[in-house]
Image (tube, rainbow, N blue to C red; front, side, top):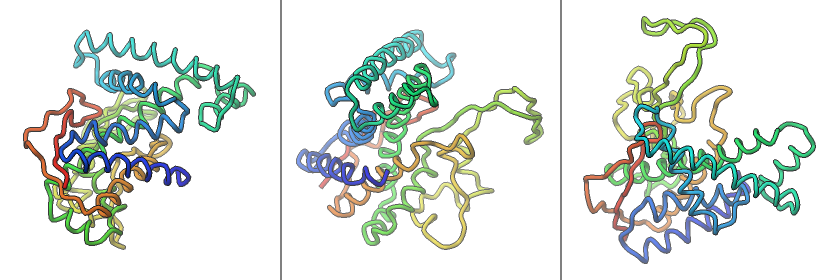
Amino acid sequence: MAALRPRIEQLVKELFDAIVEAGEVDVITALAYPLPLTVIAELLGAPAEDHPDLQRWSRALARGFDPDPLLLPRERDERTQAAREFVSYFRDLIAKRRARPAGDLISALAAVEERGDVLTEDEMLATCVTLLVAGHETSVNLVANGILALIRNPGQYALLLDDPRLAAPAVEEMLRYDSPVHMTTRLAHKETRIAGHTFRPGDGVVLLFGSANRDPAAFPDPDRFDITRYAGSAPVKRHLSFSLGIHYCLGAPLARLEMEIVLQELIRRRLTMTMTTENLPYRRNLVLRGIDTFPVRFA
């Protein structure tokens, strides 16, 4: 991840150059989507001309993470079609990288699979799709939610501008305060009793990250956005936005790095940000809850 920093800094600078020149933009299309999508696609080795297709398929799959009863028939069909097109796309790209390896992750994965060390072709295809979708759809929400929190809490933004060292702690508070992923599922491995309910082995469990991250038993004044919360020497409860244990998010370091660099660029330019509407539309997604359009004036 550290090796990606110069490229992410360059990309963030280019995106903010365009944002400042435009003056008023949709943060989703001008920053929140192109930043993480470009980074993860370049990491995997997907050519730039394919990015629009990757974004379209990813949105369909991200919507499809929600429980089926909450999806329209059209959305279920779009999820199925996106999955097929994703697999076909990566199967072709893997074949190309086997023939002509490059310095990207797919080339490295193809070499491993070819030696028979770890991955079957199906595992490799699933890994590529998962890395691409999870590697940017969640970060889209982190960037947008983080900027929204700063706009709605101008005192906290002023603190950040006054002390750039708060960039990294601010990212942690953004992850806690407005979770990019609101829920996930697990299976109980042994009988477990929680709050009067018994989960037996094999039972499905729904975990609500957004709720856990606002738990007053874990976080003092949990509904307050405080970028200094993770900045002091006193121990603070970890947020659960990246899960825990063996399921801890593989992309956590990348998401943190991208958002920290966005904040550093805001600090460097000392930009003011003004929402042009308070009525922000949100996507229908329940699992990957995020803003659909986010018009902001930058100066």
